[in-house]
Image (cartoon, rainbow, N blue to C red):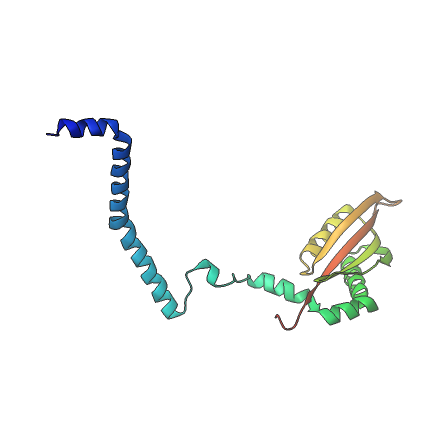
Length: 187
């Protein structure tokens, strides 16, 4: 069947012969399976491009969900307006009004409010305040729940809840509100 010289050559070079066989097998699979699939994919991309639809991931920026767009737009000002309102104290006043209104709605008694320094960042303004409130623990939990549902970028930096003379406790609360700066040219 096979010449003894060829059989001896195959025994000496079995690795080369095996690699050649594997290469031929992969080429066959490539031609039979991969090329038709690649042609169908290129045709689908061309058809989608003709319809104005992009299949490629890198062609378009991903769209933000509507809730995220609404959250950003509700908590953003132009850079000039954010700077001027931050320096004038209007943002701090608005934060304290919102917090006082929320505590009043939850029957919490505000003992003191203290505005803190406004921090101007390149892309945002941080407005800080300190509140001292008399409330019960369930009222405090409802306050945090309402704060989380307010649609404003308000974070509780730290708090301290200590028992008071009566049934209510005294809550020391430090909060920060973030106002995003937007350039009108980019929106």
